[in-house]
Each structure stands twice: as structure tokens, then as C-alpha cells.
Image 1 (cartoon, rainbow, N blue to C red):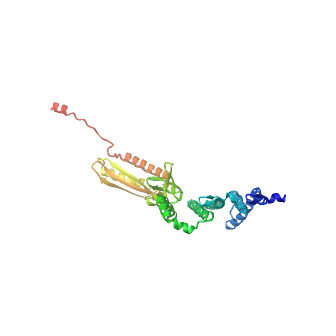
Image 2 (cartoon, rainbow, N blue to C red):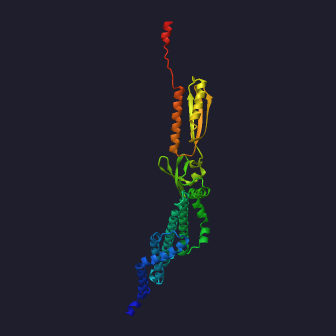
Length: 368
């Protein structure tokens, strides 16, 4: 029996294979229990930072990537104790098969670790969103989404650099120096994406608008629903979902309709030239009385122009920043009241009454 365990297969004793695969089988069988235990330890640390944290939600979110990370870590450590078979150590494009296997194992380990960190970022963002949901505004929720996406990008880039360093033994400093020219070319090719990324930081710090604001930009009017790292999503008044690059949101003239202090209504009347001046005065005075409503804060009415075909009466009035539906209701009431006033005063709109006369020139000449 001892001779069997001492036999060599691929430069390793049978006993070594049994120990290594026994360790891997053990960690696979108890993976759920071990990963749940370590998840509990991590949760106890998270609990010190924020007390209002649901343990079950945290464990359900991280237990799977944590379990995969533990299995990969133990497997890599255990397999490292075996000698790589000499007959398999062939060279593939200046790299031996042993180096390739080592690089693959290290890369998988780094990917699992980054995956675990990404899950923890998701959980942290969820906890912060619950806290932000207690406030009235939705700007806090957008800030959380913004930093969650940004943190994920940083973690992914860090994971790539870790793979290059630990799996392929590349010095990061020398790598950056060697890739400076390539990086410049890539930056030029990704110029628009970089501009949109920079614009997202401008939007975040300058805050020309926030989620929930009604804006008008590039001929598009709608409500901002989400501000991403590359673009802003707007729900238009036609209920369509438009994606606008952040660079255009920053460089274009943007009208934040939600920040206006008043809504403006207009009256433009063209009165018939046969209207007496006394009736015009009564009409202007009556319109002023109509606009003396509690919903209207300020107004101005005047007979603006005496034109060749009509008397022009112009009026402007301003309401509080009410909703579009409320403003339309006020505007409708004002217009109907003005029409009723004109009917009472028997004032005609220019061009409302026209007489058409047909003159027969030949008949007139015959009568003469």
C-alpha cells in the first residue's frame, strides 16, 4: 500500500494528488458553510459602519461570489504544491505552459475578488438608496447611482492592472510609460467618450439640473430621469425616452424649466378699426379687471399699436410656477372671459365682418 502512495505519476506521488484533491473536495463540500461564516464576519465589520443594515440581504448578495473566491483561492494554493509535469512544460510563443497555467489561475482569482467587491458596492449603494429614499428630493439617489457606476469602473480598471501585474509580471509604471503613445492614440479615438465622462463630472458638481427637473435642450423638452457617466436620459412630453450625450447637455443652451419663478401667458387682440375709442378704453379696463385674479401675480395690458388694418391690444400676465395643467386652466378661463367681455361690449375682432361687393362693369357702362 505504501508503495502505491509513493508511485510517481506526472512527477508527483499519488499521496500528493490525494491530499490536494482531498482539500479541494473538502472545500467544495463545505463551501456554503464556510462562505456563510466569512460573510458573517464581513457583515459584522459593515455593521459597525452602518447599523441599519439587513444581514440576510447582505449575505444573500455576497455569499455566491465569496464562495467562488474561496474555492478558487484554496484550489490555486493546493495545486501550487504539486510539481508541474516536466513533459508538459512546453514553450508556447516565448511562454511555457506552466507560466500560462499560472497566469490563468491568478487571473481567475483576481476576477473573483473584483466580483466580490462589485457585489459589496451594490449592497452599499442599496443601503444608501434606502436612506436617500427618506428625503423628499431625488437628487441624492442620482448621486448614489453616479458614484456606484464610477466606483465599479475604477474597480474593473484596478482588476485589469492587477492581472497584468500579478499574472503576467508586468511593471505597471513601465507599462504606462511604454503605452503613452498608444494611450494618446486611444484617447483620440475615444475623445467623445472622454468628453462625455468629463461632462458628467461637470453636471455633478455644477448641478445645472437634477433628476426630476423639466428641461429643454437641443429642441427636446422633457423630465430628466437619469444622469449617467456618458449620457442623460430624458422622458419627453411625448412620453418617449431620449438619450442625450452629457457633452451636449453641458455645451448646449439648456433651459431648466423647473427653476423658473413664474409662468407667462400672453394676449394678442386685433380689434376692428370701426371700434370707437370709448369701447377700446372699456375693453382694456375690462381685461385688466379679468386679470386681477389671485392666481395671477403680475400683469400688463395696453393698446399697443394702431395699424392699417386693426387696433393691437397686447397683454402679458404671470402666474406662480404651477403645473402645466393648472396653467392651461388659468389661460383658458382668461381667454373665455375676454371673449365674453368683447361680446358684451359688441367689439369685433379685425376681419370678423367683411363685406364682399361684386361690381359688373359692363352693366354699369350699358346703363350709362
